[in-house]
Each structure stands twice: as structure tokens, then as C-alpha cells.
Amino acid sequence: MKKITKKHRLAIRWFHWVNFPVLTVMIWSGLLIYWANDIYRLGWGDTTLLKFFPKSVYDALHVPFHLSTGMAFHFFFMWFFFINGILYVLYTIFSGEWRYLLPDRHSFKESLQVVLHDLHLRKTAPPQVKYNAAQRVAYSAIIVMGAGSIITGIAIYKPIQFNWLCALCGGYEFARIIHFALTIGYVLFFIIHIVQVILAGWNNFQAMVTGFEVEKISAIAEPVVMEEPEPIAPIETTEP
Amino acid sequence: MSRYLPKPEESVVPDGAVRKRSIIAFSIFIALLVCGGLLFAKLYNEPQSADNVQPTLRQGLKANERLFSLFYSKHREAKTFTKQDAATKVRVNGDVGMDGTLDTAWRLKVARNPGDTLVLTMDDLKKLPKTEVIFDFKCVEGWSQVTWWGGVRFSDFLKAYNLVPQTGLKYVGMITPDKAYYVGNDMPSMLQPQTLLAYEMNGQPLPQNQGYPLRLIIPVKYGIKHLKRIGVMYFSNDKPKDYWAEQGYDYYAGL
Image (cartoon, rainbow over all chains, first blue to last red; front, top):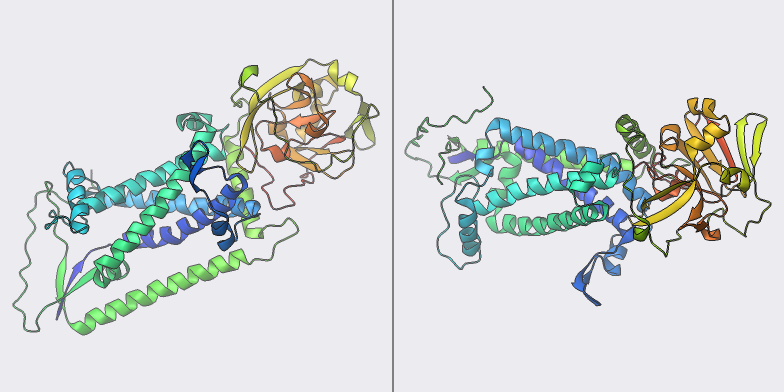
């Protein structure tokens, strides 16, 4: 016999796995666009620590001279990114899932403890329900970043028709910088996310596909005591 | 955790049932991934039409155009700057249609109606009120530059030469004298008050490489639409030929 614990609802899994390839296409097509005016770098004065992007990166990804392709894909897939993101946010609000995802007043302190624990600098991890404090901060930040990409994206895409939005983003050129920086942020998020998923192991990963985590229990297990949740806060928030 | 959260739902099931549910879930997952990959490959490899872009993506660009045209207002103007903000070294980014130099023999030909072409000299244009615009010129490549232009407001030009009835048509087409570069712009964008038939840059006559003697300045569009060295202008309900749209770019290119 095995004990299965429901973890990710179908809708959450759907949004997650739709977002992954769509965001990949957005980053790829964005790179094709960025190449045409690739002026960003890390450095100061004449010193450049990192140029975005080195020729080797461009060549490996066949980036050069595909601006029109990049624009055509970017302005097509932006709708999937936008709609999927909006649906995800609405779903988390109306399903009550936001309770697991939004940081609370302890999360910022605890997320540091989680990081220290993950780096083996701290023995114990703070208590958690579905997501630990660092995950709450990261998964909420990524939504804010997504909103930022959409807002700065519109500001660059229609800077005159949405001139107030462009002004809100600090002007056309600054909006482009934020839009770019957020994309670098996604790539960094992705790298950490993958490492964490690998470290967390198969059971955690497969739950993002199946929806449940599996735990081995002995064949003649004593009946599992289903703890009655104390009916303090109802999870359903849809009803007025 | 300070806030109470419901405990996740748990159940005890036989091994076989878990395996079965996992296999079903992964089968669906992989099937969907493959479908998504195939759909993307189909889109990516779609035979490109004469306009150098996948027809589905062209439909997407057109759908965006229809949607954002709804929001368009000619009263929304590009932010303007002072003369001090304007670049002295103005970027030159295109030379198609600009072979050789033009002299005083240049004339602007305006096809008012079939068989009725207006022929104008630079002096004719300079008699009309001059309008200046200093705005952030935006290139489809991603750069922008504050530049200062002077010329005849397009809507003033139409009024002066009894071309107002032509504003009932959907597009204005423009072609260089050598016919190598050509653009089409929608009428609402052409009628925006910052759209100029420009003959000056930084208070001086246009340099040859900036479209001497007359070029289009249309701040609500990317630079690819600001045709340099206007030879012929015409009005049409059909989309005029457009050089960069034929190269796979968005026809609308509106900002």
C-alpha cells in the first residue's frame, strides 16, 4: 500500500507546463529582437565584465539577422504568455491557492533560513505547508516579474498609444532595460529552479505531472488517521 | 506558519493503483508535450509566403493591428522635446532608394486621382505653413534618438491642395523616385498632427542621406515607415506595397 498526498491541482500543473514552453519561445524570440540593438552589458566606463551577448551565444543559437522572425513570434506568443498568466493569477485568487503561495509576515525571515538550510549552513528548516518560505517568495516574485514584463512590454510596443504606461516605466529606453533585465531574471530563476527540482528528487518532480506525492507505507499499515482539519478558515473564497 | 492552512488531502491506495495513475498522468503529459512540439514545428516550418513570414504569424500581426487600431487616437501625440535635446549626429540607417544625389529637377508627384497628377516643387511646399517636431525617433531595431524635423504638416498639405476628399481612402502610399523603396501608411496615422512632409533637419535643409529634398516623418510609426526622398505619393483603399512588410515585418508598425 502507498499513501498519496494531493499536492498540485490540475489547473496549477496546466498553467505551469503551458508557461514553460511559451516563456521559452518568448525569450528566444526576444533574443532575436534584442540582437538588432544589443547595447547592454555589465561593467563600468571602458570595463566590460559581461557583454549581452557574446558572439558565441549568438552563433550557438543562430540569432543574427532574424529580427523580423523574432518580432513575428514575439507578438504572436505574447498572447499565450499573457492569457496563461492572467488565468493563473485568477485561479490562485479564486481557488484559495494563494494562501500557500503568498509570503506572509514570517516568510522573508524564514526564506533566509531555508537558503541557509539548503546550503547546509543551518541544521533545521523552518516549518512549511506546501511551499517553504523561499518558494513562496520566489513564486510570488516571478508573478510580479511576469506583470512587469507585460507592462514594460506594452510600454515598448505602443509607447505613444500607451504613453502614460511608458512614462510610468521611466520612459522608452528605461522600459526596454527593465524588460531585458526581467528576462535575465527568468533565466536565473530557471537555473535555480532546475537545481532545486533535481535536489528535491523524483517524488517532488513527478507531483508536478501527476498532482500527488507518493509515500511508501507497510502493507499491513494501521489505518491512517485522517486528521480533521480544524474548520477555522474555509479554503473556498469564491462565495461572497 | 502563522496562518492556518488546510492539510492536503491524503489517501491510502494499493501500489498498482498508484502505478496506473502515474502512467496515465505521464502518458497524457508526454502526449501534450509532443503535440505542443509538433504544433510549434509546424508553425516554424510553415512555408513562407512572398512576404517572408509564416502566414499564421502574418495573421497574428494583422490581428494585433486590428486590435491596437481600436485604441489608436490621432490626438495622442509623441512626446516632444526641446531643440537642445535633439541629436546633432543623426543616425543614418537606410539607403535603399537613395542612389545618387538629387538636384533641383526634383518634383513631388501626387496622384490625386487616376490620370490626375499634381506636380509640385520644393518652393510650392515651402509656401505652406512650416511645422516643427522634435520627438524620439524609434527604430524597429530597438534604438531611439531625439531628432528635430521641420516641414509641412501632412494634414495642412492635404487642405492646401484640395486633397481632403482623399482622406476617405484607407492608405497613403509613397515611392522613391527610383521606385526602390516604397511604404504604405494608414490614413489615421497620416492625419496625426505630428506627421510631416519634412524638408529640414536641425533647422537645415535635409542632408542627402536623410532623404533630401523631402521625406516623411511619421512619429506614430517605426523608422521603416519614414520614407526618405519622396518621389510619388498616392491614395488607395488597398494596402500600398511596403518594402519592409515584404521582408517579413509588420505592415502596421504603429507605436
